[in-house]
Length: 280
Image 1 (cartoon, rainbow, N blue to C red):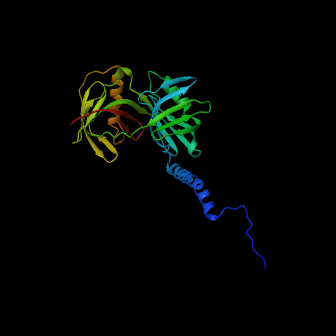
Image 2 (image 1 turned 90 degrees about the vertical axis):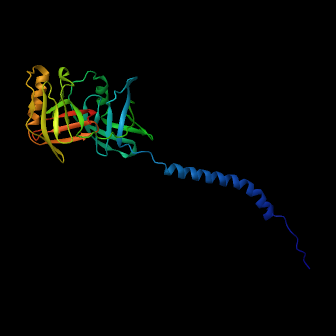
Image 3 (image 1 turned 30 degrees about the vertical axis):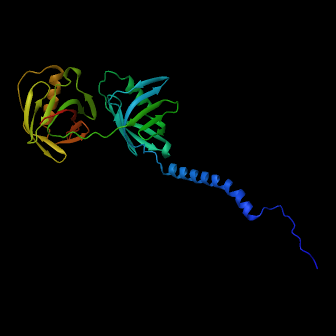
């Protein structure tokens, strides 16, 4: 009769094996779950879109940092951009190359006389061609091929000033597609207000005026203008004659963006004005 003998196989019994493996597996399992959770957290965290309204804070180029004036801004859309270099307004075409780059093709820009062109000259030079994007929750940095940067922070859209009950200061005249700032000698003189009942009044540049105005959807029509009769010479007189002719050209298309009003006649002439105060 054969006797069966147990031959050791080198394998630990199941209970012993379980006791040996569980302490080692638990930390690894917990680590894996934590990593998975972090991956899901990062995967669900999306960077803000580069499109939107941005306040330009500074430029870095050639080892220098140039701090931006308050008016420097960029409104970035999917296919176009607009903004202000610091004095002159501009428009450009943009084409995104994935989430990390875009190509800028400069377009229209105003040609107003500006006291300090240093910053906006550099801004215009950098905001062209292929730029890489560095985005954050409330910031956007554009970088050129040579390492120069345009640093910006998110800008909350300003509420549009009301057409009526706002005192508007004329700051530029539009003629033949060209926007020219009001001459320095006449700056701040031409102002007007549209009352809720349609009464228009103000200063044309030299003489005070009043008229009846009619607002219909996107058009504004001035009736006959009555004004004082002081002799107006020099830049103030030139601005006055331009505004008098503009107000007589029939329906003007009006558009307000933030604190800026644009009036445009059918022949392309017009003006831009900024909100100064609200008149009750």
